[in-house]
Image (cartoon, rainbow, N blue to C red; front, side, top):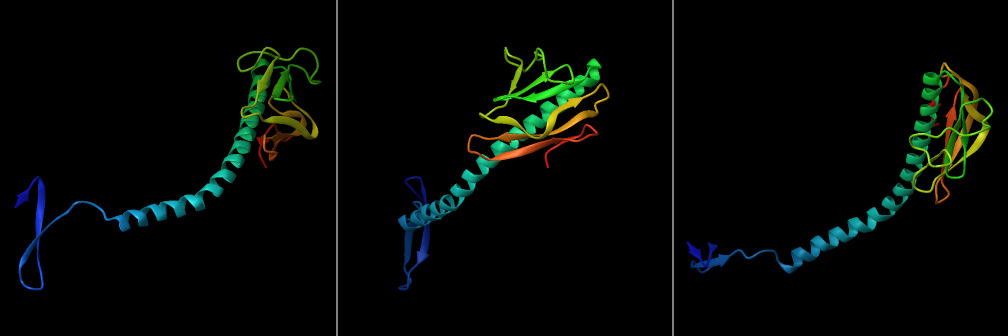
Length: 169
């Protein structure tokens, strides 16, 4: 039986009579319980989300720098010239020599000063060793450890090993 577009369900009352009841949605109590559960889940999730985003930003910056160091290694192999990587305030530069002096290399991905910029206001500094230098075989003539620091102060290091391997410890 259909009344005004709604399906009626018949229930049997204690007196034995049929009573028609239509389904109209959720009760206020059910909606309040759902809102309370969503609120509790949001209350628990927000602190984790805030700490995750800052850590993920720094991790992304370290991976971006690792990619840049691997690019320098590939550039040394393809040009058959040594490539020195020098960190700058907002990123890093390539020099096609072993001393990181002279005019920095400029090309795809650099700004007018030859600087590869790190995203999210990251800074790169030399943490240990010297500026990494790769020779024409992709081997590191000079090893070094670079530190990527995020805008919130967290940091990660990227190391260049003597074999030329670039890793994030």
